[in-house]
Image (tube, rainbow, N blue to C red; front, side):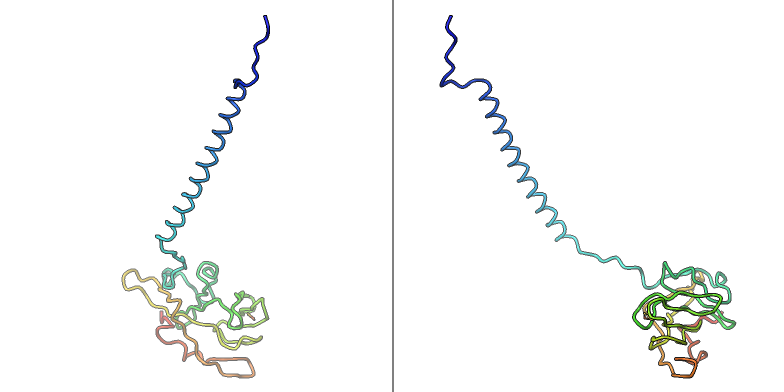
Length: 187
Ligand code: FES
């Protein structure tokens, strides 16, 4: 018996190849469409939602006055960018930002000095400039006691920034003049 002549007819291989390419192109098409729709959806969602910048609160509590002994307490420097200082008369809070170009100074307990690693400004524990290029003393924040729970409340954006006086020791501000409300807690 003579073999069947397959010329001009569509065999199974051709059919499955065509189906494969058809399915492929359908898949690519739908995939592209869904991707485009997804992009539009994300864009719309971003448009609908406000772009919120999460910044740390500027008014916050730092615990009870008894938690702070005489001297400089550095435990909140990293978290809150402040130092809490207590003397015989009360307590004040200084901001850990150098008044030269904004670096973060370090406190050296053995020297009782803050030293800025960037350009060498040096501050005493009252924030006076005793060395380096800083043009002003360290900021002090407003402080108060919460009437309900008695914790110290720090208002980071309310700052004491008096004009310092040039002296042989550095740029100084008379201390008792700084120890006034709302920048000093008599406790
Ligand atoms: S930023 Fe502190 S000395 Fe320059």
